[in-house]
Amino acid sequence: DYDKIKGQKVIVKNLPEGTPFITLDGEEKKLSAEDLMICDGDASPMCIAGVYGGKESGVTENTKNIFLESAHFGARTVRRSGTRHLLRTDAAKVFEKGSDPSICGYALMRAALLIKEYAGGQIASDIIDIYPEPILGQKIVVKYDHVSRLIGTEISKEEIHRILEAMEMDVIHPNGESFTVLVPTNKVDVTREADVIEEIIRIYGLNQVPIPTQIRSAMTFGENPDPFKARNMAGDLLAGQGFHEIMAVSITQSRYFKDIMPVDDKTLIYINNTSNMHLDVMRPSMLFSGLEVILHNQNRKATDLRLFEFGRTYLKDGEAYKEKQHLSLFLTGFGQGESWLAPKRTPMSFYTLKSYVDNLLARIGMSGYQVSSSERDDFTFGVKYHRGPATIVEFGRVNGNFVSAMDIKQPVFFADFDWSILLKAMRKHKIDFEEINKFPGMRRDLALLINKSVKFEDIEKIARKAGKKIIREVNLFDVYEDAERLGDDKKSYAVSMLFEDKTKTLSVKEIDKIMSKIIASCERDLGAEIRK
Image (cartoon, rainbow, N blue to C red; front, side, top):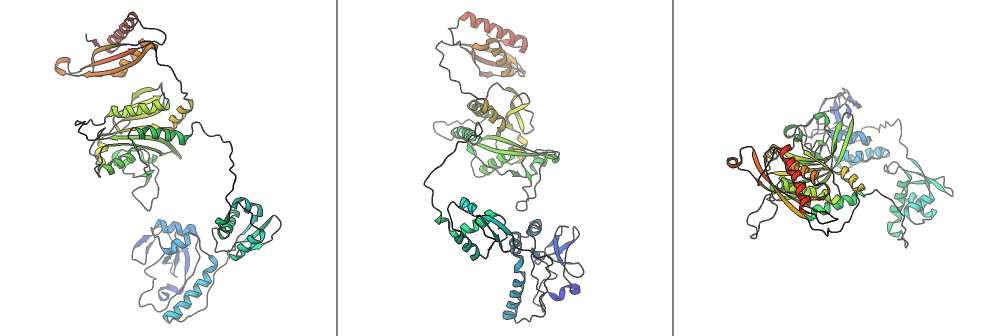
């Protein structure tokens, strides 16, 4: 509205940070110092350049005089302003893709003539064109042999020139090897030789490019193991055991790491997500992606779940960023569906998860790792497999507070593999085949009364150290606890041991000697009482 322009001046400038601006739809925006604004003579904002008009300067039913403006704005400025203020207007969509600076005068004249013809308006002034530095079309050198190489067929020079000139792209300085194309300003996406060739084939027609009759191949050498094949191998194994693969988004909600599992805010990588503002950080953990999927399924009456995901986590370390590859497993609910053949269903447990973890490591060929308790906050109890300081996998039952905070109604078990370490293990893995032992094995059972603080792995270490190469298996097959009979701090373990020798039949004396060592070590080191 011309009469609302104070001082009858139009000034294009940036305004101070936080300057209020009311848009055409009556919504107030706080401007950024980077927003390019069209202002009046008093430096009051009338319009966000190329994005949205203002309420104070907009036309109404009482408007009599109109000031028409036709301008060209930089794509980057318009994109940033429109995104910053969540204003996805038609104007912004045009400018942010790149507009034609040479069309401004024509557009202005066309608009004025339409108002005159259809609204009975009267053109009150000549055109004022402020264009101190005209934008000229680019000059791009194109080689004829590059046209043939990229398109895949020979196109005559005359045909190339004809196609380009039909699109108002003048061909200048042609010679035997190359030519120069003068690209008009309305083709903002044509900036390279390859772009010009793309324009040529677009008009020439892809259907005219012949399909080659020869197939050529070359020897290539890739990583060993191939990361893609290794991932498929692990995925196939898990899918065969009843797992479903999930593909969660790598951005998540920062509230998870403030309210549920507190994380140092300096390590979180925040993003400016204008379309989904609650998803504001790159995920530092794989846990909550899986819990969201479990909650989604639980709300749709699917409660028995085995899930796995290949993904990455992201953390900030000072000025550096850390990106890590993971394979995560999630278990919840019962291990089998309802059936008249199995009226009593068994819920999945920590040991269900442990069996899947062990199977995957066995398939990869990883062995010789250490076992320790996990100190992670997201586990109520958990175990860590590691080689020295390098953690292979941590798994356990998810902290009940986390599960409740996500509104999940049943226990969840979670395993977090370091996928990069598994890939390294595959590179060193060699498949060895051995024949079935032709000599019979010998089994011995041992019942021990021990303190509740003693773990099975303590007993297993003693047995394997005493049995050395001939002890094949150590298995815990019974646990008994009764405060009245055994005492408050006591439990009974029944352990089986299988002995085999690939070179001979074992004698009873040899096994008795080893069993005596095991019993003596358990009594001395663990305070165990042998039950007879």
